[in-house]
Amino acid sequence: MNKEKAVVVFSGGQDSTTCLFWAKERFKEIIAVSFDYNQKHILELECAKNICKKHGIEHHTLDLGLLNQLAPNSLTRQDIKVDKDAPAVGTPNTFVDGRNLLFLSFVAVFAKQRGANVIVTGVSQSDFSGYPDCRDVFIKSLNVTLNLAMDYQFEILTPLMWINKAETWKMANDLGVLDIIKNETLTCYNGIIGGGCGECPSCKLRKKGYLEFKETYLTK
Ligand code: ZN
Image (cartoon, rainbow, N blue to C red; front, side):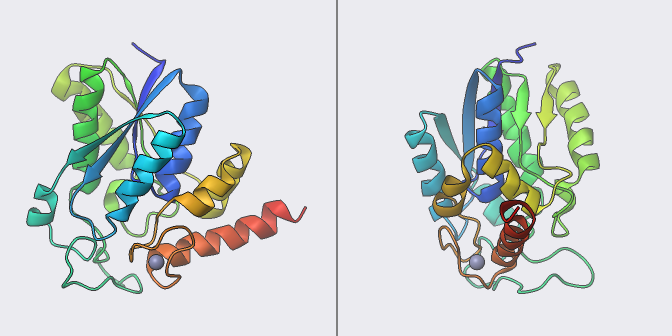
C-alpha cells in the first residue's frame, strides 16, 4: 500500500484548499483533481488551477458535464435561484444528487491508475448543510464499496469531518495558509472570489465561521 501519495478532491473552495495544504504537509506526493460540471461558479476551477500552479502541485480537471444533465440544481442551472435559507424538510436546492459519490468514484479510478491508495476529501458532517453525501457513514460505506469494486485498498481521509467552519479556519491558520484561503479560494455560490457575495448560504457559513475563529483563536 502506497501511503506516500495522496489524491485530493479539489474544488478551489475553502474546505478542499485547506485539505490540500493539510495533505501537502503529510504526504510526499499529492495530486489534485477538480471537476467541471458546468457549475455557475466556474471561476472556482480557475482558483483551483492557480493555487496548484503557484504551489507546484500536479492538477487535473475532469469533465463531468453529465451531472448537470441528470441532476438540475441551483449550482448549475441559470434558471434556478440559490435558496437563501435551508428548507425545513429535504435537501436545499444547492444539493447536487450523486455529486460526492461520482467525484470520489472517479477520483478512486484515477488514484488506482496512479498507484495511490489515499484519497483526501473536505466533506464535513459538522457543517454539512443538509447534504447526505457529506456524512461520515456515507464516506465509510463508499470506501468499502470502492475497495470491493476495484479490488484495491483505498483509504479515504476526511480531515474536516468532525470540525466546524471556525475550526477549519484555525486549521488553515495552523498550516500557515490563512491568507491563501481568505483571498484565493472561492466558496460563494454566486461566484465571487475571496470574501464572496455575503448573501448566499455558503458565504454566510464561511463568514460566521471566520468571525467565530477570530474571536476564539486570534484575540488570545
Ligand atoms: Zn456568496
